[in-house]
Image (cartoon, rainbow, N blue to C red; front, side, top):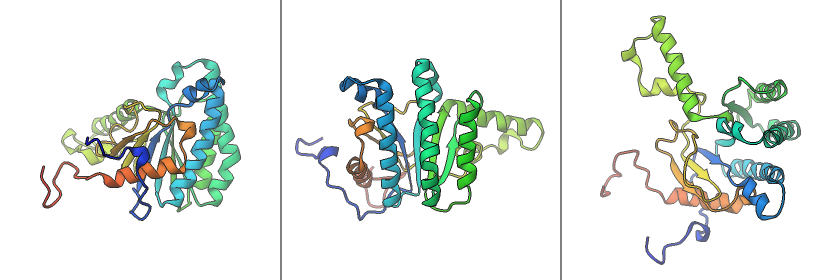
Length: 254
């Protein structure tokens, strides 16, 4: 990179460009944010919920049709029970406190991830959020909760295998689009942009199939500090990319 090239934090946002249709975010850094301030990790998660609310509004204001937030991974079960309990409590608080506003704003809520093993009250709230907003036609907010991409892909393979076993399909019928249609995200366009906060540079088992041609933007900002300005800078970085999907832009070199 040239010495005078702008860093992501120095970019002036281009708000006139067409927004990505689908943005997915790995919300990372809540615990580190709290530790840096001498606070409990649970306080970092609470601050992270406030950041999520800011970004939901910012994405809607900027015309993003689909926003996916990675809120609890299938690997997060390895965390201390007290922290898991806090994360579940925050999910319940978010739905109880903010669902009415989301519904009023014509937002459709969709939840992806395994439902088995979740506490009954959490499961009931997730189902309530989906059912209440099912017919809304504005932005779709996708909450990845108890989600892991490898488990999702394995589940899609099992569903296809059962269709082959019953004779409904032959193995030769199975193509990439069909696999996508059996994932948790069936009917949702693949993310154009995946953002990860906190300086970590990996996908952490998030939308591995769907992100095949997503633009990836990694920012140093810890999630509770992620705001509208950081979101705009990530969008501007997206607009600077040359998306070829494995091909060539006419007149461009490879």
